[in-house]
Image 1 (cartoon, rainbow, N blue to C red):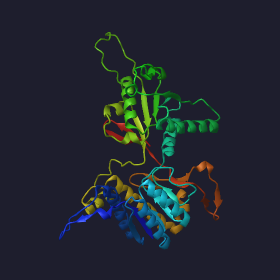
Image 2 (cartoon, helix red, strand yellow; image 1 turned 135 degrees about the horizontal axis):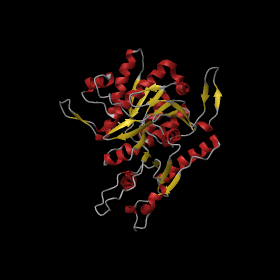
Image 3 (spheres, one colour; image 1 turned 30 degrees about the horizontal axis):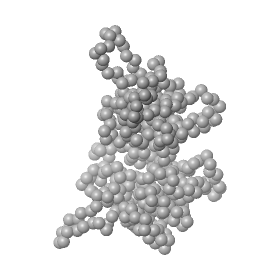
Length: 398
């Protein structure tokens, strides 16, 4: 028994008299697209003998409606709840699922503060710490000898996220018994956000080195801040022509790689000459390979044939999630949750590699001779992509 909880807003659907034409609220689009992917996955699972009763529930993104749904679930306890989507209803449903020992999947939210001490809560979209760890591990492997600079504004989200990188660095020092790897902190406020011209801009080059690669960490989710830093760094990799400069003048060109969080993947307003010249890398929980939108991809062709439209991001996620958890139920039964850390699933948009959060603080208790029972805050997918801008395209690094 599977419960699918989505903000469909069915109370706002209008059907014209004597007609099959219906109009719906634009807020329903996400849920409709996600449900389309789920439906196609259920068809695939059924062909392989999967037999499930799926109840589709509309939470209207409303707390009172979610309470009503949660109470009814106590009478008809499902084996899996997929959803809700938004954080307020996630928090409410997570506590009910915890009390009733129901496995519940958060399909889209990366928030880490939804629940605690809840081994039945499964977070598919990795949290910010997992993204930071992906970047950190890559820097350790590929940029150990480089000049690593950490940019952030004081008393901001950047400072909060920078603290995660500092924590990872401290853990690395303790684990390796070495402090040879260090970050250079640059507390940077762009000129256009200050009232005076006396800013850090004029002395920024002091933190960069001419004879080796400079790796710039920008742990920000603010596109305005990212663009401001990008505008300041770009002349360092591509100096502008100065007609007044002497003919024999050769400006310094710095070798710079930029690393950031998923906000860099929002291409609205991005200058591709900036991000490509600065070798911008960023993490993401979503990436489609170049051959996804081709007839060689059976999912793509079947989706278009079924719905007469291309699958969106939410449709792809709905398909991958339903296919994975359906296979888990089919393979392991209703106690599939304890098997999640031992499975590795390659979906269209990402891998599913689940672990406990936070792993270092959690004990394990023997359940039987083969597998331990994880006692944890929640279960989290710990796989993220590392991507890079290459001209006008985005490519997967690892």
